Image (cartoon, rainbow, N blue to C red):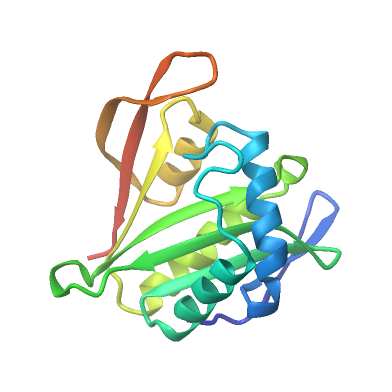
Length: 181
């Protein structure tokens, strides 16, 4: 699905949120690698589950053509610094919901880029009759959990000892959902 481009100016940082385009694929592949190396809030370490340019091209085409998928990017000075995806499920019993994920380069934290990607995704889901948005978040990422709660997400469960981070310790994953019924 494609949304109308939105412009934001937060704390002196001007950026746009728009739908991903096929020509973004190479930049997105490189961006994902960089983000995975900057934070342990993601599911992957740098290089794991690598998606190359061709893989992103296919993903963007699929998401653009699908009524139940949405792929957004955050752009500062013509550079993609963040992206989010909502991925639906073609099975009828799950067709009412999407899975949401977001990531932002560390240098761009604090400018509400992730927040605005989330808000645009929620608006798109609500406008298209999707009833539920689900996501997983590392329990230690309190800032993200508080953001999700602010936008109507509720904790649905805790996956105990779900991830092992670089410190060798086990961490829980919080399963959250927002239902618009």
